[in-house]
Amino acid sequence: MEGVIDAVTRELLANRGGIDWAVTEFVRVVDTRLPPRVFHKHCPELLSPQVTTSNGIPVHLQLLGSDPRALAANARQALRLGATSIDLNFGCPAKTVNRHDGGASLLRDPARVQRAVEAVTHAVDGAIPVTAKLRLGYADYRLARACAQAAEAGGANHLVVHARTRNEGYRPPAHWEWIARIRHRVAIPVIANGDIWTLEDYWRARSLSGCTDVMLGRGALADPDLPARIRHWQRTGERLPETPWAVRGAILADYAALQRTTLPERVVVALLKQWLNHMRDRHEEARARFALLRRETGLDAFLRGLASVEGPAGSGRTASVHRSRDRTHTESPAP
Image (cartoon, rainbow, N blue to C red):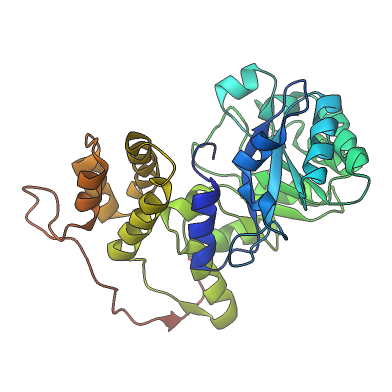
């Protein structure tokens, strides 16, 4: 989620409801202790008394690296700056990150996972929780359980497991049933992650993994109301109607309004396209808007394209600009 889930995005998504806590983009650790400004750039919530979003959602700081000593030094720095939890990223599949011995590259050797987690756990000395994000392995699943056990042995308080290997990247399907095999081998909580786009996906992920909790990444960008939709169903058994384009477009406009105060407009346009790209595979109107605006470079013109009632030129249709009047109804989300 590098380049996507920054503080502005966290704030907007947290305000939609349904989120228990959020994790920052990773802070890349190489061989030195980073200065406070780097931590504040990735996690400006450190400047708030409780390290939360404005509506009180806790924000956990994520570190990515492979050198135990450097990770320990930066964990102590984070603790001094007020971090209330540290998450270690062993799940990033990006080629550049893995080529430089970070992220999922450590999953080829469970002992390295344990040393990294152990170093950070000792560095914070029980003052704050240490957690880990894993995948099912690097090239295959053979070491999936061993890596989870290594993270637990190193002192991790919980694990988030993305249900694919590094080599599988984000290609469907997600193998949620494999998370169940990991969960049976460790005593700490395991949280399921990967390909949870809908209420039905949430139910299948929980059913196949046996996990009580799930973590949303791309799914929350594709539908910013997915966390609230899941929470509403948990509490009431009611299925909320689909999030209409008017709501999605308004969230993107709010995002632009906040980002343009500190970033060049061309950068804001690029970020908007990145978020809209996440929406388009799961929503017809978002797909049409992306096709219309993909070559637009001006921010104001881009925002007009998001807000316009008219659909793309020549499409012969208009956008949905009002909330759906579909009534909610009670039923299990299971297919």
